[in-house]
Length: 329
Image 1: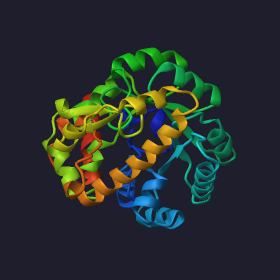
Image 2: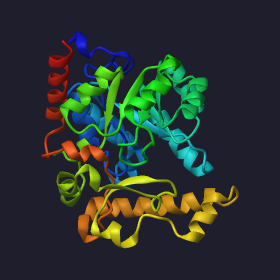
Image 3: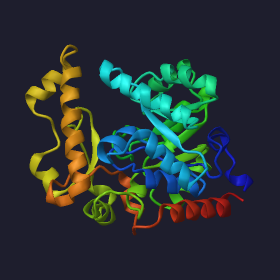
Image 4: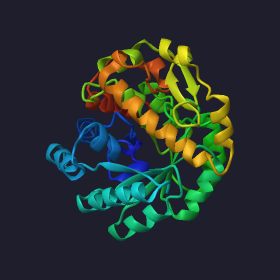
């Protein structure tokens, strides 16, 4: 047991330093609950619960609490792209606090308003970063830890290796969690040995019995190898890791000339990214629910290399924990 006690387990009040990362559109409440019940921590993604899962947000949190009394976390997208969006996210945050959530993962913006909001409740905030300059902003904002998204991650991946990221962040005196490329037990053990306080997994938990994603999505993950993961900027205007399917090959991975021009201009990039985000949200939702009957548009990271079967989320957590205890003593 002592081998798995890290700053992350202390901050999140969990037994195993393993996070099921928030994933749009894959973070259904059953998956979040299963990971937390097994000793890790599942992260709620509000838009996945409400827009994709068509759940009332508070009701979904209460369903999770009916399954497990162990901690769950919440993902808060901190960007202030519109007042309507910010008000909605702020309301979800208030509900989460009322329902007892105390661990928060922030991303895509300055997390200070979240840190300030949760502080009176004893809340803890870890912030997603891809490089040092964002980590410095997050530290100034008062976050308690960092989630270092590397170049093997799914979704909005970073550009640096797990080793390089840890090296450039280690002097900030904050717990650092590795995110990206961890698809098997050895990958989990490796990042703990490097000095990370834990690991955040996404793709591995899509290929689980509890995840509500379409069977085609799960099968695409099982069939893919690391070399099948490519970056496309057609989803959100910035590079996103997806599985190279016939559909992706057909439409290409680069935004058109006009889109690239608009994304570079300070006055238009916000609107262009908003357009991309709305378009991609719909495409990802349809791909998740209808599989290849719609479009083969599946986000995933290079961890696909180590994923061989669709398994129960709790079994994955426990197997990773067993491997780490054995390796770390």
